[in-house]
Image (cartoon, rainbow, N blue to C red; front, side):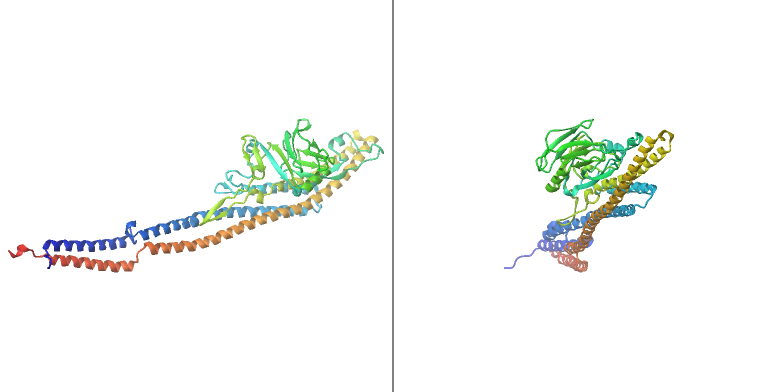
Length: 512
């Protein structure tokens, strides 16, 4: 039995077909306008989910390529440039040490060399104050703090308790002059004679073991020393230089260690003695104490310093410290600033001051300058004695004899000082070569990181291209295909309109 088809049914069917064709035409028109396959996730959830993942990955790659990697590369470039400059400064220091070790320069030339060494020291540490975009590159996490104090006013507000740990590598020798003449001896005509024989005693030298602190002119109030056996003694030095301790330190032989304070640059300690020279920043070790430190390979001292000046290095960048003003404790640990440069990949971008700008370079230069200054001072003293020999007030035979004896002693002392100066500058050649090696190793490390960064950038550039292609394949339409489909859909739509118009032209009323 066939079903009766009414005009209403034909109209409704035609309208439904027209709507379907119109929706298809609208979809294709929207794709042509947006160049995208979908405009709502509901149109194709699989495409939508894949689009979110690809866009997220592409955003991360773009972040790495456009921001993180360029910023890391700039930081490393600034670091490398500073290390390059530091190496050039060390080369100048090396050349000065080579020149001065020949001992063929006049007093004026020696003074010029000493001044140049001081200037180069300041220039070397100034490279440690280099910043990138307002962030200091050699000060670890404290990127807002320079390596050196920028003014005397800033340095005057600083007070630290500093702890330094030593090993046998830190042991060194210094030269102490025995029977040396001072300006007071010259003025008082105090020639040095043997108490028994009455013969003239000429100056000589003696080697003294020392541990050189990172700073000179340290506070004299209190110290804490931990010996090679792990025993700790708190040491107090009063204004008169008297020393008191709360514990007795001992050598490995069981002998009590005597702790003294001195400001005499030529002090020679006893075998079981530690002499603290706060002016030069040195611990002078007796022979038995030295042997213990060398054997046990450990020694520690804690001291205060609050008289920093412009150009001094910030101790928190090198040692464990306590800020005596704020009470903040700084523990020196490795502080790596890392950038994300790829998926699950980080790169250390910073180099710390203690890796490239050794604090003891300044102390070594102090030794070099002191050696020159000792020679210059002795030449001035000899000139003073020669002048006194021609003055009427010293014309008597006794004064002439004493002055000639003093002159003989000073001449001997000058020879010793010149020999010492030559030796120190020969040592300086080795010191500077060692610091150059340290800087070179830092430069190589930075160069390796830059190479790794370049390789990562190249890899990410390829990934960016791949992600863009995948994103386009997933989201973008095939324009030619959509245009063809659009033309076909438009033809179908127009055909449906024509068919509908013909099928509903007549109704039952036309036959009544």
